[in-house]
Length: 328
Picture 1 (spheres, rainbow, N blue to C red):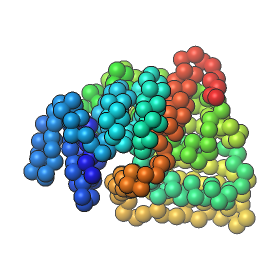
Picture 2: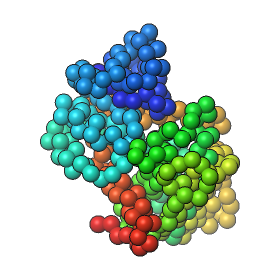
Picture 3: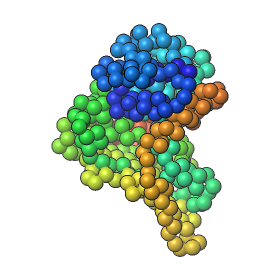
Picture 4: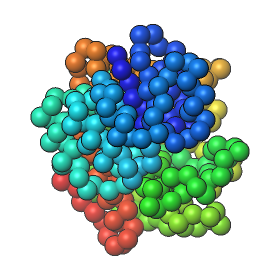
């Protein structure tokens, strides 16, 4: 199986390294990053020209370039029948999405958008807990993801990353779309959104560094969502309150607490004492490769991710207009 990776930034490097540990793959990287040339010793083909890389006709393409180039890149690859894995966020806009979706449907391509939190043991446990209706009727949800952006990739200049730049598709709403994704995975489609976002910190950015939103789902569940680029220490939590009890998940200390009204006690489940963050990415890629091999549709396909993308843009639109935005 021939796999093309477009982009060799931090996530491109991670996916490449993980694929190198999977047998029977021919790996190609398209990047102008000089570090990628070190991969030649490992049997990886390197191209600096995307047009030249296209001539390799990859079975699968993993799109890891800047967000604003995702859709144009995906359309060109879909036209040559390459199955598509696109790193989150799907795109910086909704333009040309229908064009891409049309090609995907015509060619019956397997697609997936990389929201790796769906493969975190804590998030998977919550999903299973909710699917089993162990909380009963859900009353409300509070989710938060805040961390200091310069600490994300020590040794790199955060000011030139896509997450910091409007023209590259940055901003906290799209960059931290994981929370929107898993909330929609848990609770289904969003009915309407009210949001406030903006630039609060002194970080050198031309995008919003915080967002505070209320999401109302079609099943009437209400979720409060806070995202930011400036918190120290980092905070990533989700609290779900229901008729039978509540769940509290904390990414930073890797705990999942469950309170049941029937026992009036908390039980604390330590997901993994030696949490390996890379495990999520490995499982994600193996899942996608297996779907392609078995011609099976993936969860979080581009079609599904498009709907989640609409929620993110509704949040942005609500902040700009000061109005509640309804989604179809």
